[in-house]
Image (cartoon, rainbow, N blue to C red; front, top):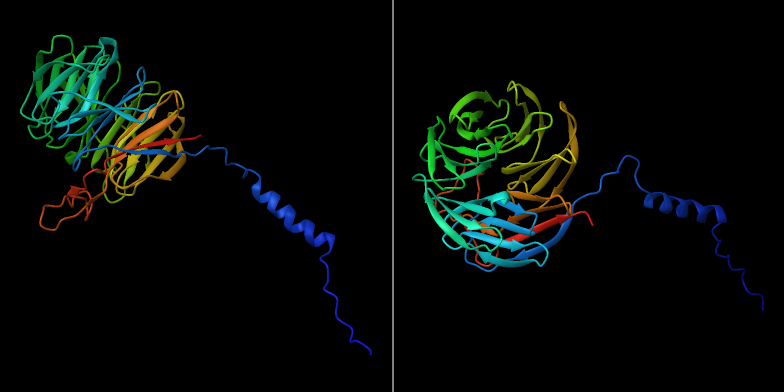
Length: 362
């Protein structure tokens, strides 16, 4: 009996096999021009505690300690190598920030009641309590005069305290009720962002006077701020409807350029060694890194997603890591909402959700 001929299944030719394989290999090759190594989430460590509030982060590279202004809980110290909570500095309840002065082996909390708790960096033991005003938000250390600089937005003034003696040296009234981040220039001056006036002011720490006041427009609501001593440039992170990083000439106050960043900025850090500016933007939940190619040249280096409300940051240059913190929150319509920041800016956070985030490249 004759069987019908069956059509043989055609085998793919060698050329048909080679083409897809070549395409796959090409896809795995590095993309031309993509030399940047991107940050990614290396660890997320939740710290115990009730509903958190927090503000600034500062980093002690000598001991690998991250200091977190955790407000109600006080200054929290986190070891970035062991990923463990080391201590909470006694007497720092209400702290927004810790100012570190390694050459004195000292740290100073910025407490919202207008006080500072001095502690030893080596032992984390409290030394004394310093009173300088009725309120406090943030501050910095001015190395030429050896003074601590505290901002007091509610009081519309700033305070100068001698870091060695703990004595109040002077207070200076300002026209701003929202005095934000500050940075010294290493020559006795301090640059300060005034959010409600769209200005950066320069203050002489020796004479305790304002020596310049510059507009940040079109950068509105300036909050985060850092300084490039090498090229004399001020970097200002601005909120507003179109958030940008503004670069100002520190000698003249002239606007050099602006670059887009995410919404909800609070933290800006400049790395002098790599010539990169880091901005933490909590509403859009991103970390935007900008590369400085020259005093007047700036371009996006990379932008990565983080977590909502991760708005302040600290930089670990030795490990090339960026530390942020965040927590899970919500909006209770029965409570006041800070709509000036965002329509649904959290007005409460859940217990046991405060998390230290480490972003790294390896």
